[in-house]
Length: 93
Image (cartoon, rainbow, N blue to C red; front, side, top):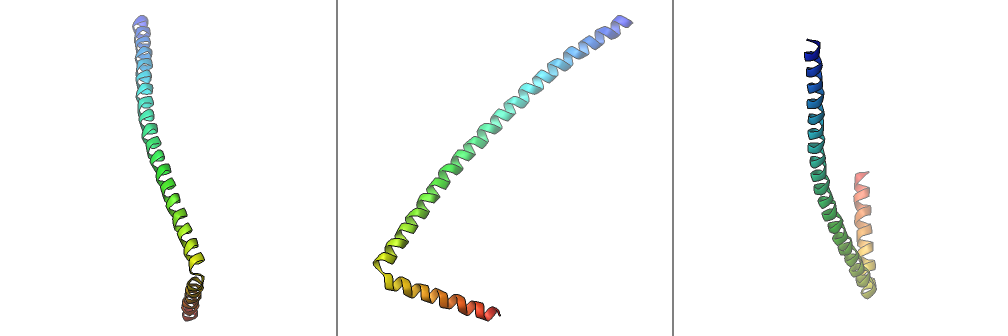
């Protein structure tokens, strides 16, 4: 009977070791797949952010060029925006 229990324990240890190895492989594969997917998303986000940054710089250049080409219109727009903001602020009080 003692040998039977020892044999069962040995078999159980062997089965647990095999199960833990399979589990480790499965977790490793899942981790690798998730890492690859997240890496793909990160690459897309970096590319999109770069595109948005270039677009924002282009808008800034166009705004600067407009102000340089039409300084009095730019001053007039600034005065108008300031007047509108002051009017809105005065109404809140």
